[in-house]
Image (cartoon, rainbow, N blue to C red; front, side):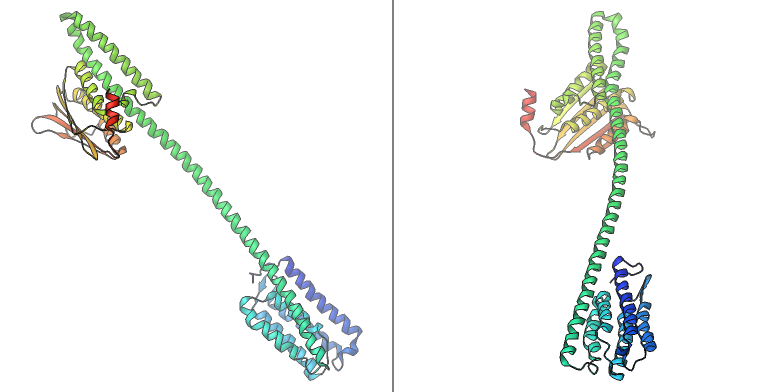
Length: 408
């Protein structure tokens, strides 16, 4: 029924009833010893004390054996009842067996109830058949015993319900504790995610500054180097060049402001091919390099984030070709396929060596990884030239109307 190491209030209440039954029996038969018949009062005290004490060996605070208790209670009580009723032919009344029935009902389990209740209901009352003179009294004892057995079973249900409620409460407390622990873990994870998000945003800002601003200032540096010679040969052309450099500087400043405010450039609203064409023309204008653009396939809508990442990679590729490879000719190819877009950049600059990739190359690779795309770089056949390939998957329907509206 229960673990039983610690008694509950109902256990103490039942024990007090049993103790009262024992003390009352001693006092009553001391005052009315004639009712004992041929049984001596000292023997009655001994027998009743054994009936009271021995079962408590198997049910006491700190220990309970709910299988042995009904067996011992039956043997002790039944032995005394047989001795009094069958051997001594003395009717001690129903009171001798009432509390044992109450105890059996209170301490029985599903396992012991199958044999203990029938055993007590049938055998114990039968031991008094020789001591009871009339049939009516013999039958009525079953009602008394059944009543006390039912009271014991009622107490049993109460203690079961109490223990079940207590277990549920303990489980709820454990669940609440686990929830608090999980909440604490979630808060830790939330802080980690926040820190990772900040780190990712810093890296994104660093990439944007490196790719976009670096592209502009590389173009300006190349133009300024050429401007020092142009001033002496063609002042008017140099003056126009200065105006264009001022415009380029303002564009670079706008890019810085947009990156700081984490706003994508407004030009991503245009078709991707137009962005690449404008970038190539600006690059040719300020660096004196030649850029050929070839578009294959039918243009379709490119998501702004994909378009911006590819644009930055193209800018970085052009800038690196001038800055590190001293290239003078570039070719750009846009290949529109139903499920992917591939951008190929080739130049005639110095080929790559085995040195570790720089920040710009790492940034391009990171951008492609974020888009679930591919980034490859390698040397062309011959003594000069580098080839960079960028490929990203494209999903969804092609939106030709977006191209037409933006172009018009």
